[in-house]
Length: 493
Image (cartoon, rainbow, N blue to C red; front, side):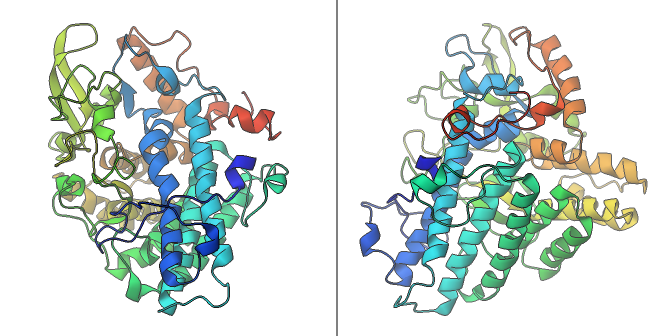
């Protein structure tokens, strides 16, 4: 942990155009001694708080939150094997897996940056051209710190809670807090962030977090811990603000040439302009036997691709006539790993580069969408035994998908099932499914049944795959944190 908490001089992102504040990548770094004199430098510092999340979303988080679920699996690959990813898909979980350590380290790198920004905001003699810029920087740091901790606590349970800059000597003495303490801290941060963003409405920019991002996340946090009364309040405030709405066409959410800021409340921003700013999702998710047929870049070797492959369970979850299916799931007909020609499904939400000649992709990754707010609000109303009030919000999402037949039930349990399926099909490949299964208490039941079907249809899975118990609802703490920093391991590892 000592390398996690120390504030390093890091590469930060210059403010570019209003539509994509992460567009221009820096040519050099700034030393801490020359920093923090004006709102320009503080804006740079705030931009840097987004960077570790940008990196772990494209490299690790989809493995830990989507691949592990019943939505996704992988195309067998006799050339490259399963490495750190395929074993997680099969619930063969070990603390030395680099996916866990990478996610942990980037999360605390981000938290460190947020803590540094918050600690410097009130330093004297800073030239703030607008007081609202200071409030925006504060809101961004609090929101992002909350989101880093929210993903950490949902993965690992209780983790070290660090809210101020610390030295390397201090860092190794910090042990795990209880998960309830992490959630309490997240809620405090988000409430304070909402107040700050409320004073920064005149300096909002597309792509940055804002007041509605905070309230949508706070609603999700309350929903996760079962505080439905508070969740109802904050989610209704997002809806009643009128600031966001469903796009008429679902496919438009995933058009990298026309990025969405109408339905998307918060997303990780990517750009083709540099390797650092880009993602490589389609080059990772396309069938590894498809060459350039899907990526449109035959010059890029995708021998190690084939991940996040839609499962039959996900394919079956879509109702007949659901317009989301053809957007979310592509089908390529060609040679599979066994040299047989067959239809091979792949994740269709993320697209080939528009103009980059290589593997640099610029499609954004949605974190919070207005449809998510609608379905969370419906879930909250249903859990508060206001099931008839919940139905219209579900119907809005279904109508956009072409499922216009009115729902014909007011039964609380039946509506729970409907909402769960709507969330599965609406947000597949957006890193939500595993967390939804866990917070609704369905993870072991659903994944055990899914594992039986997977093992029956895929001869290449390990014999010990899909051995599930409640211990595996939490990921293992990375081995370095246990062995070097003496952090307690989760049960069963």
